Image (tube, rainbow, N blue to C red):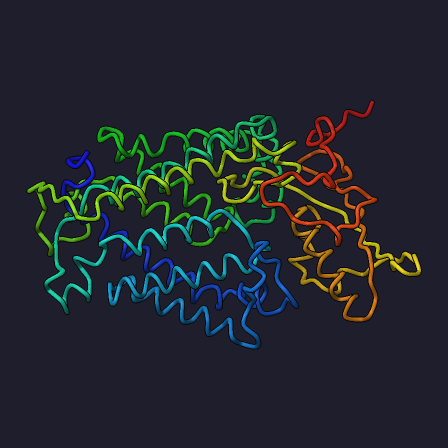
Length: 446
């Protein structure tokens, strides 16, 4: 075990990954301001739908979030140039975690992966070469790293891709109808819009997605297929970047390849001035070996377990959304909802329709209608607002949801006062109605 985990290997891949990762998170910080993401997501809304239990995390008032993201961008530069690396990486990780937990209207798995990678990078010796830290402090300079660093990162990448592949194994993905739905929204794209509407393209997207996610890590690990797998990866992720416009994730995924190529190849392509491949292979067992192994093992067990937890909840995760997050269930379905909110004065028993849209930004309004946790949080918000006005109300919701090509079906029990319900992180909520049979399939009307 010591020879596997603590044998030192060349660190060219880690060093290059640090530079590119630092560049990408810098772009994420400054780019979120430039594209208006900060304004739409954190400045304009009256409140944010935070992760339940993290209500204390709220956006800074006024222009505070612009400064917040600008500071993140500066820390990203610190990571890229390897200047006060651990401090810069830890600061960025902490700030990005705050952003991630304070809002989920713009949730996607890529933000979650970025949070995990930021924290992982805090503990990796990524500034030992090609960094300002190594230049200013030659004592830390080293061309090597323990092999557990490479193993750990590859396992994390493998978990993400494996679960993304398995999650696609359900009827609507396998018959390419989900891909067709995704592409129908891209019809207006210049040059490629009509091309993306062809049926064979939908079948390619469906099955290339499954097999790419399942096989890309093994193909990159095998020397004979590595170069071909790399160029397939480049094409796959650039296609996703152009068609789905998902920010830095495709480029981050391409950069993972640094951990698979040999140091000779990496130095020939990117680090010609280094001209030093570490080959000594010394085994250096640190005093903290038990702690390192324990933390890595516990972390990987959690990462393997989290995507499986939805099997312990009643009903279908596509319907209930329970345990959907943190599970690498990436771009699997389309979901639309229709929502009517009623409030009932507990003293007078007078019931009236409530204009919930006045509380929400356009993006929040689109997202809240189909997700039970957001609906519950909206009910809590409405109850709080009415209490401040001196009214004690019950909040009822008529919610109808459409998944993929299916019909609209009622999602929430009409007789449940959602404002009076408690949220359970590890338990099914009975006010979510059972999923109708074949709810995501369009009914045949004869």
